[in-house]
Image 1: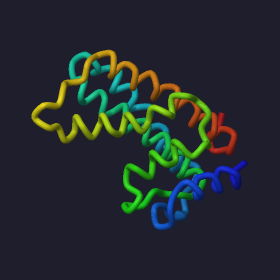
Image 2: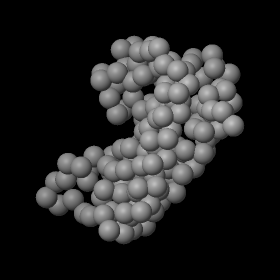
Image 3: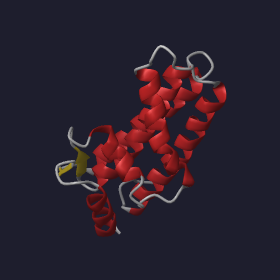
Image 4: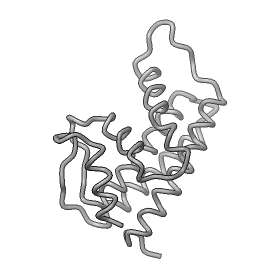
Length: 153
C-alpha cells in the first residue's frame, strides 16, 4: 500500500514540488494532532470569527494531508507551495468526496486572507461546510495512517 501511495503522489506532483525526508511515525501523529486541534478551534470560533474559523479549517485539512505525506517520508517544497497540497488531495489517494472541496477551500481561504475591496464576508453556511468537510478529511487521513501502521491503538 505504501508504495502505491508514494507512486500516486509522486505522479501528481511535478519534480521539485516534493522532497523525500527522514520522518518518523511520531511526526505524522503530531501533524494529525495539530490538524485535530485546528478543527476543534475552528468549530469553537465559527460564529464569533468566521474568517478565522475558515482559515483554521483549511489549515487543518492541509495538516491532514501533511500527516499522510510525513508518514510516507515526503514533504511539499516551497516550489510546490499550497498548490502542491491541492495536487495531493486530487491525486486519487483519498476516497472521501470531501477532498474534492480542498481546492475550493484553498481559493476561498486566499480570498479572505488577501481580500479585494469587494470581497464578500464568509457566511455561516460556508464555514460550517468547510468544517464538515475537514472532519471527513481527518477521518480518512487517520484511517490511512492506521493502515500504514502509523498510529498506535
